[in-house]
Length: 392
Image 1 (cartoon, rainbow, N blue to C red):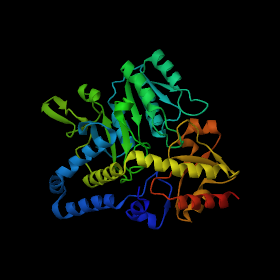
Image 2 (cartoon, one colour):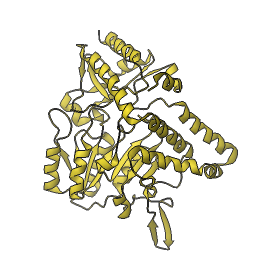
Image 3 (cartoon, helix red, strand yellow):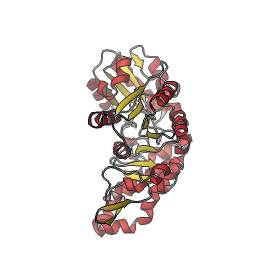
Image 4 (spheres, rainbow, N blue to C red):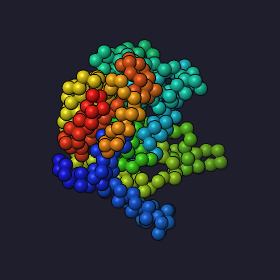
């Protein structure tokens, strides 16, 4: 991996030390050019006409994303965000009163709220599997709950946003496949930092975003939809003319691919920027990205362990490129602004973002550090030195 070249293609590296890739990564030049180039084309050609001119490139988004996830282009839909993807998938599950949803304590806040909303409106029962003392969902407890309740849906966040763990989505997927259960995976933080293979996960849906480790634009996401869902003609609650054909006065039929989960109106500049970002990641190779990220994260975690005023909060057998730590006797806003004043970008996770997990860890907030492959060892040393000054 040519880090010097990758950084030269990342304008933000000139002025910022960016360790907030779990929030929004710095976009590389090809992504910027794809977005601005299409906006310019729309300005001089017209929006509909520009889309027609770029039809082949637009199709390339679905092909690139399919290559990234090991599926077919017909299994991919473009959306505005991972949460939007997740909600569209959730809205198509044929719930009935008394049905249950099985999830983990560490699942993402917006997913937890969506499940609670279903519980409030439709009397859906929420089941939460136990967490292992060493971190991560207890697959044995999940199996026990599956067999006892036969939930209508099993949902799992692959990499929780406010914890460093990687959840065992493939093991859970095997349980769901054997029992023919609907399985929804939130890949918002995993896609782009580690290899993600939907065939190995056996999921019916996988939601993702572009702005994080894929280094794409904000306002862009995707949804993987399995052939099973497509063949069963399950559809989002508010399907529109993109996803269905109106065939008689009181009847419509959904299109037979994942794009039934899209809207007619798409931001084609962001879609083309997303295509460029995914192609960029595919070209580097997710295996290589994972190796590089692991090296950088080991440096950060080692440095944190040497500071007595820091407490590493990450647990779990498999660690991701998200590092959370507690700083003794510090305020979240002060720490964040102190680092930003040194042109170091990080983020803060508050208790309300991960209520169950943070209560167990007995913290009100955590500093979240998320390295990515274009970061350097020197930047890690600068970050650790800045944190040491804050806590001394």
